[in-house]
Length: 451
Image (cartoon, rainbow, N blue to C red; front, side, top):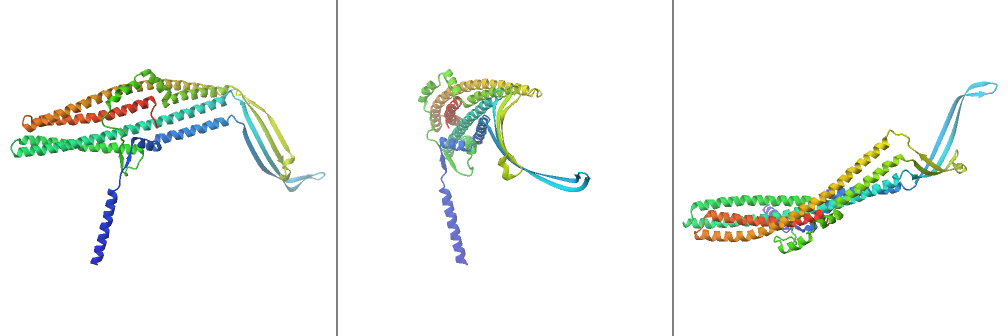
């Protein structure tokens, strides 16, 4: 029994060790910004919905084409009639009660075709409307894809920003704890007061709270990105992109400003690229075609038809009786309770609303680009200011630390210098990733977002 228990223990220990090693060897999948974007484009619900809408509109175009083609119908029928009589008339005798039954079969088959020759151009206008709706849906799909790209970029930059802020908080806490140990040692030898120890302990506590908050912000940013990508939250992912660097190359500011210097040129480019604006144009075209369709109700409908049929009382003699018909049908609505007039007015209202939405879309393009240019200018200035602030804060912290170690400075001066240094690093991180995001936002507002 003892040997059996010992063997079972060894097996369990080996299994647990193997499991722990396999778990520790599990490597998180690294996703770059482009890879994350492609995943989101495949799984994002707004893109899937827009694609389904486009499929429906394209089907409507096919149906509109079908209205311009002749219809073709074939039919067949069989009927059996049974007649029963209770009396029978016999000449010279009169009606006598006599029950009789008679049956007759009828077989019919036919094929017919008809084509609308004229209906006030409603059929061609319906095709134009369906085509415009399909093009508008295609533009909506493109804008949905661009929106997903910008959303992923925003979440990705936010995650990297919180990752860097977490590192700033971690380094700051290490520095505070190291400083606390130095002050405690100085207090033991009598060169520092106990008040300095207490102040530094409070600062360490504050830095620990800041680290907890930074860790929480990072975890939530990661969760938001994983959710947006439609990934399994239980899997491990590492988000890293070598092209996104913390230190912004300020030498590119001149080239970027030269690229976006002409506001009018950017407006014209956006009006030719923005899918939402192009979709608004197609909505106007579709509404205009709908007015033509409604006006078609005031015109007569002319259609041609042809029909060929066979009929007989006996199936084997079906081909003995043949009928061929052809001709024209003309119908004209004299009065339908002003329904056509109401339909025309409703479509004209829709057209006016579509025109107003087009004007609003154009103004939206203008204000989006204007605001993005202002944000880009501000982001560049923020990068310059924060870079200089980090240099100054680094030197100020060094001087404050040396003075304090020499006994020429106070703990308050040192704490202030450390706080300013941490704030400067945080501002630099925020400014860098804000600059990256503003550039992507400007591309999105112009319509250059790639997917």
